[in-house]
Image (cartoon, rainbow, N blue to C red; front, side):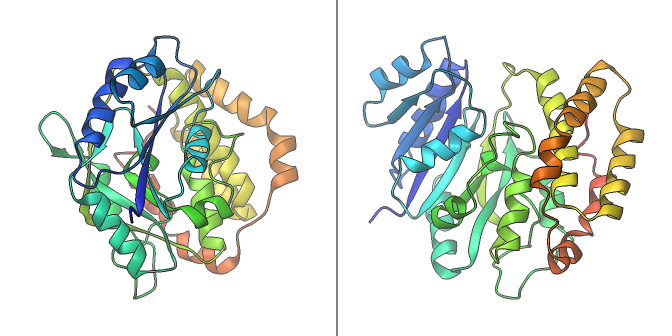
Length: 295
């Protein structure tokens, strides 16, 4: 039985999507692959269908962002799902190891792999923060407990992912993992980093860095007020106000966040105190982070 499938999301990166699918198709695990094309106009869907007929291609007529992953998960029936962006790929054997971890730990919902940057296989700076996570976890966890994860380098338990509704349509893309992670932990699931899993990342040059930063800051503010208690939410908001670059992108991000306040206040559900206590140490880690900044 094949226990783990792969969902790839892509947008306007035909060549990179083809490369990603080729690497996944060569894996010894031979996982079923779903490629979700987020409204590309460059012929991505047609090219993948033509070259890789074994791949299930879902071509959307719009860019659904991270919700494309939700749609891809619905196309698979494997108990575990690995995510890829079109500029990441899993190392041979890592998918099997991820499935083994899920098999061994029934309350484990997400595993985050080690990330190496290409070319050169240099360890991504974020890895040190994952490896040294300050989040406390149960003794049975096979790796350091996490309070969030990086979707393009993670695998999930399908049941847990679907139970929490997957990624938020409202957040679209950019830091969308944090909200889902908190809701998983609140529901009694666990998230951890596994050093023996490896995902390679060859950062694409075809990316809208302006929108990525704008949406990322907006989503951080929305998450903060959706799930954090009042005082930590105020501290986090003030920290972002003083440290985010003083430019038009930041102004637009704050404006986007303010415009979403009616929705945020309607959907606000403060996470339980035990979860807040577990994740509170992340505030200091985020303030000191050199890998995660809105620049």
